[in-house]
Structures are given as C-alpha cells and as structure tokens.
Amino acid sequence: MFSPTTTRALRRAPSPNPKTYLCPVCRYSSSTKPNRIIFSGIQPTGVPHLGNYLGALRPWVKLQDGAAPDDQLLFSIVDLHAITIKQDSSLLRQWRKEMFASFLAVGLDPKKSILYAQSDVPAHAELMWILSCSASMGYLSRMTQWKSKMSLPSNANPFDTSTSKKKDAPALKLGLFSYPVLQAADILLYKTTHVPVGEDQAQHLEFARELAITFNHSFGAELLVPPQTIISPAKRVMSLAEPTKKMSKSDPDVKSRILITDTKEKIHKKIRVALTDSIQGVSYNRETRPGVSNLIDIMYHFQEEQFTSPEQLAQDLFGPETSLKALKEKVADTVDEHLREVREAFNNAMSMGDAEMSGVARESANTANQLASSNLKTIKAQMGLGWD
Image (cartoon, rainbow, N blue to C red):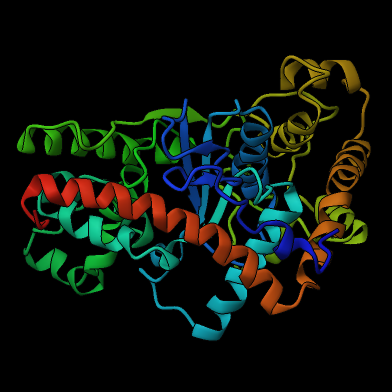
C-alpha cells in the first residue's frame, strides 16, 4: 500500500510564482485564506483501540474526505502531552511510529492532510509559554484532566495545603496541571477554526476559546481565533470488561479493549467474554443494560448509514428471543469485517523502512513549521517581541 515511491511523490510541487508557495498538502496557496482550518491531535499510546478509531481517527478521515478544496486539515501526534507522565524513551519512540502508521492505515492521506508529531514543531511549546502568561491558575485548578489523571475527586484543589491534602500535592506536576495551556497552543497556533473533539475534551476547548478572547483583548488585535467545536458523532466506546468505564489503553486487562490490529480470532475471543448481564434477550438501555448496550453501540457505529439509532438496530436485528451469544457473534463479525482492511494497511505501513516513514512525517512537519512560524511571528510582533 505504501511503496518506496511514497516519499518522493509527496515532495513539494514547484511554485508557479516565486512569491506564492503552493502546498500540495494544504491544497491552497499561501496568498489564499482557507475556508476552514481543522486541527486535532492524539497521544502516542501505541496501536489505537476501537474507541480511538471510532471517536477520533475515523471521524478525521471523514472530515478529510469531505473537505472543501480550500479547507486545511492538521492532525498531530501530540507527544509533548504524553510526557506529562513518565515514559520509557524506547517505548515512546515505538508508540510514535505505531500511531503514525495508524494514521496512514485508517486512510489519513499526507497529500490531503498535514500529519506530524507535535515535538517536530517547536512553536507549539513557545506559544504555550506566551499563553501561560495570560492563563488563570484558578481556571486551571478547576479543570478535570489533572484530577482524573491523579484519581482525585472533582472538587480537589491544588492550592489546599491542609493536612488531609498534603499527600496529594507532590504528585501534581506542572506539565500535567498546565496541560490545557499546551492544548490551547496546539489549536490557536494555526488559527484553527474548527476542532473535532470528544465530549470529555469540550471543557478544554472552551478554555482555549476564552484564552484566545482574553489574549486578543490584551493586545488589541485579533491575533488568535476562538475555535468552534465539532463533537464526534461516536460517543465514548466503553470497556468490554467494565462497561461503565471508558475503553482505555491504561486498563491492565487486555480483554477490555479491541485494538485496530487485533486478528479475527482475538476480536471474537474478546467480545465473547465481554461483560453483559443475565437478562433474557437483547434490548438497548444504557442505564439498566450497559454491557449489552455497549456492544450494540459498537455495532451501530459501523452501520450508521443503515440505522437511525442504536435502539432501531437492536429492534430490527435482535429481540427478546435473541441470545447474548448470538449478539456477541454478530458484533464480532461486524467489527472484524470493518477492521480487516485497516489491520492489513497498518501492517503494510509498519513494514515501511524507518527512513521512508520519517521522510513522510518530516515532509508534513516542514509544512506545519512554515504555518506555525508565520503565525507566531505575527503574534510576537504585536506583543513587542519582534524586530522592526
């Protein structure tokens, strides 16, 4: 799928005008304002699971394939976010490669979208520092990300130095606490107009919007664009082992998740042992039947064009006489059918030489660096940080 000519084919086309750089990745010239600028990112945690695929990667492909000629799309492996917790360097390097291979495998095209690693564009970190000088500590303390990562209650306060809270304070690192500022920088750096996010990231996007508005007001210019939200149509995919919790790579139970590289046998085995209930038949109710409903949700997300809702799918394909074994068999077949091509494409991408894969990644990173540097230069000049 990815031949040795891939990198050569992605080299920049000659500019028809020395003053106008024509970018085959961006699909518009630097003298033309894009219709929409879409940015999103995902942490390198290795091979994506089904929740990553349905909630992020597949919607990105749909945005790419349905984009207007003057839309610009950037999808990033946000590896700087990954180091808010301690990482093994060799493992992180492998995970970055696997995530980039996953980008290619699901159908993201470096000729249509800018696909790059966050750490390859230094302007992300520089803008984060600039924005952190305007970010409110009080606002950050109310964010949920650092609390969930540390398994703290929603009312936890990093400034509370009472005896009962002291044991929690050493675990909170600045990188984790300021995570939303870097996320805001990721978005605002490219004058992003639209951000596809999951429901659990909506709070961070609102923070980015408010930070942009505050920053613009402080410097008397529309330097940053408050972005709009595109909520993924796929709701959170839940754990197969504990369907009241989100599917996650951090779950120690490998049977709790399906990876996009899982074989047919693994998919069937994991779904066969998925937690359901003892109620007769198949019906959809997230409150009373979370396990069964999660399986129906998974199947529905692969067949949205055929059914208007998970409830309709459950009514049309199953019923009170359907066994849970039959449901699981049908769901497993559906998942395998749709992941088969992705699985094969991932293996092809991973078989690319390191030089070829890094060449494709660097080509996109070069484009991202050009865009980021130009925007950052304008921001710094307005702040008094540039030379006349």
